[in-house]
Length: 76
Image (cartoon, rainbow, N blue to C red; front, side, top):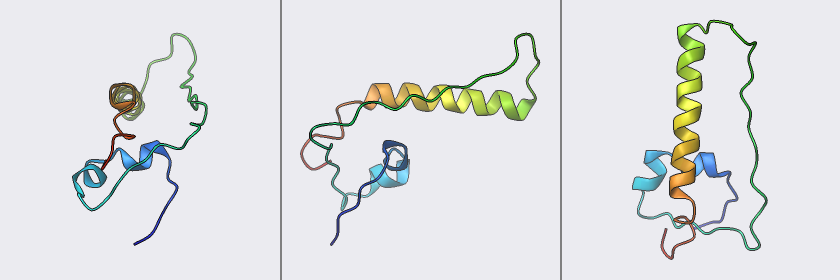
C-alpha cells in the first residue's frame, strides 16, 4: 500500500481506470489548471503524424473536461 502524487493525464488511462484497487482523490485545495497550447504557422499543411497528434490532444482535452470532478468521488 502506498500513496503517489500523479498528474491527471497519468491517471486518465484506461488501465488506471480499470484497476479497482486504486483510489483517486483530488488535492484540497485544488491546484490551478495547467494550460497546454498547440501552435503552428498559419496556412501550413500538417503532416499526417502532426494532424494525428493534434487530434489526440483535442480528444484528451475533451475527455479531461468531461471527467472533471469524477476523480474526487469516494472510491475513485
